[in-house]
Image (cartoon, rainbow, N blue to C red; front, side, top):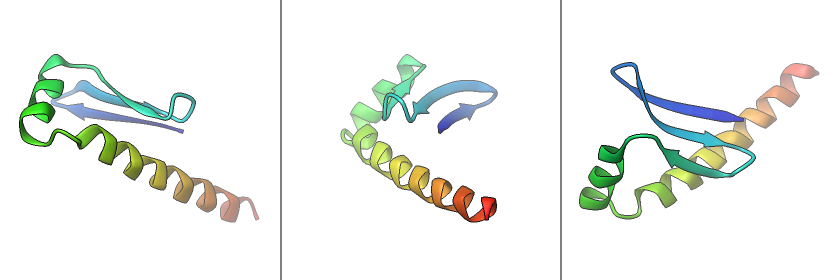
Length: 64
């Protein structure tokens, strides 16, 4: 499971189910998160993990 966040056609974040964490791709994203929402990456990672499980369940349903 992979998610990619884009802003103006530039990749800013990447999540992969193998690493189970968000990797920021732009320095300004790290700075904006630290300044405004210090725990953003932790909260968003947990949210993505939930969406990953939902997608997994939906795929199981579709396979039936």
